[in-house]
Length: 252
Image (cartoon, rainbow, N blue to C red; front, side, top):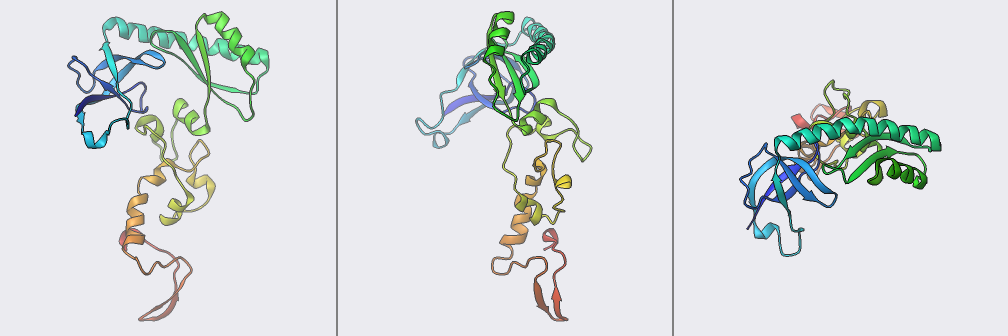
């Protein structure tokens, strides 16, 4: 059995496992952890729990990194200062992109907690040679620079927004990882296949199609293992022959 905690570095971000060591860590605590990117500030979203040996055979999961320390008031002040600097850094990078006339759209700039690296997130429709841009940025900020290209779904997660339901985007509020969504899910739920109605603001299929997919699949397929009628199929009923015009799996 191995004791671990779960922490994330940004709202609705991926949850990573860490070794609490000798610290008394509880859910909701703020901690400073050692990562491959350097020291980072994170929030504990899963308290101390144990991973059974059956779920973590030797060599299956990497050894969790240890907590560096609990976050102090000075650490929180440093985070606020980093956030302020990120806005200025973002504007400077945008100006340099315009100077180099690069076909890329800058989305966000983020400092690591110890300011040993700045990560710039961007989207681009073509391959971009940004070597000269990296040299300019490294000269200005005197630290390591990383430019990370992301897709349209990741762009929506970083920028945030409001979905067609009128609520904040799922990916910015609680979805830690993107799951695969297919057009089959929309068909099983008898939704309109109009792309404008089943696509999110990122232009991809709505993530919420996945939420009820398993329930519809169980009602529609598992409860009808031998007979799976489709819309427009001809069927024989006690009242005579008919054509299926709609299917309501939730009512079976």
